[in-house]
Length: 180
Ligand code: SAM
Image (tube, rainbow, N blue to C red; front, side):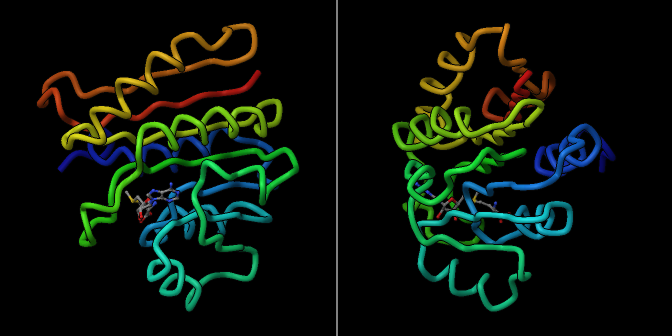
């Protein structure tokens, strides 16, 4: 097992913890089993967590911390629920591990959510995107999200792409976006 070159979710937690000074408000755009929300809730004052699966929302609500608001709706409707600047937004795209693989994030809603999320991100804020391209929808997400992020103005955003060079071309990628 590797300590660093392994789990991209862990790397995203590390980056957020290490480099983000302002830890007021965070959004977990894909609650799932709640591991990212667990992390965020320990570090941030307030966390909004989006999830389309009612069952996952119910399960997590039973153990959620007081500073977490679980929102059973799609993350492309971010601005309907959050109308203040946020320091951090996490995307862990794809389907729920151990769940129904048919219920997965989709390229159009993921991209729309990322576009809205970048507008909500405050100065110095971080967005992390874990993208799994080993399935059809993941490949589609890669094909629409990456070209969009490549065109973000460098005067406003820094965009970094983390890829395993010696693994399959379908290995997951981590993208980190920092707002100046
Ligand atoms: N962050 C999670 C964790 O720590 O366990 C893992 C997330 S899992 C890879 C992706 C989740 O996104 C699934 O639970 C899926 O139901 C959810 N999802 C799919 N489309 C969504 C959407 N449009 N808005 C919010 N959540 C969505």
